[in-house]
Image 1 (cartoon, rainbow, N blue to C red):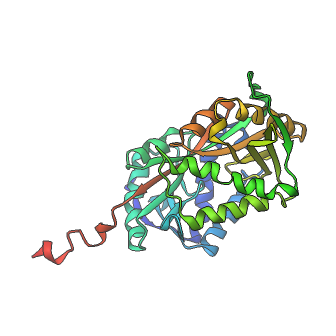
Image 2 (image 1 turned 180 degrees about the horizontal axis):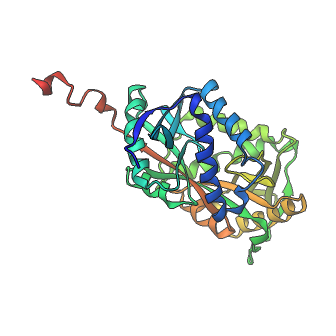
Image 3 (image 1 turned 90 degrees about the vertical axis):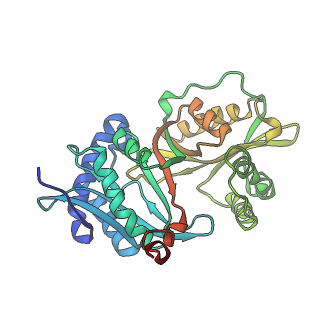
Length: 335
């Protein structure tokens, strides 16, 4: 095999990228069968890549051997309040040919990270598939850390909890806007405390509260509220999903859920999960997706107990921005 040439990928490389991604996903589907879904086809993947190039600022590097693409990493340049200016590598943003090793991934990142830094992006977020450990191992050895877990549960595998709470579970209605607003702080309060330490920016907290209050107006949402002695104890909220390369065709998302701290370990979450499972099964869903912060001890222990299995990790690397001037091109060092 010839020596790898690394160069920027363009829309002209979409066909070769699609081939690599399809090979990757076929391997992933041996571990996670639901990934062999309606989106795993050339047209869907080609259209997805073309839209990334046309509609966003996507920058990637490909590895070529004898002018044939054998691997790529591509990320979108983004900016928002919480993450600032950063690179987001989507689930589809990385693939290597099956005969290549994790070292190719590390070399691809070495090349593309320089270009991302030139764009002012010192925080790098990437969604890593878990069906083939080569990706996870490579990013571990690039000093990325796990931030978020994306899990899927086949409802056939769910085993209802025993010793659940005797709380009543009811459907939320449009009169529950304030109740949902009050419960909007449950998840973020856990994220804000040890050991997650996620900053609770006042503007973000208020936006989340407003969003929770609006959920009761969403006809697509199924919101369950646990009540006992006329007091709300916790909730779960479900939405139907559109399948993609990371999500099943027949899936529903458990998007947000929480129990007030004062009612933790009383079986409220178990009761909500038992009822949520029953209702979603009756609606005809076969799979349920959810994601959680790995450092949130409550969620990262409870959701796997429910039966959610990790299918992807969001991994992050934050590079010291002092590197912009503290490098060997600095005149002080040169002199």
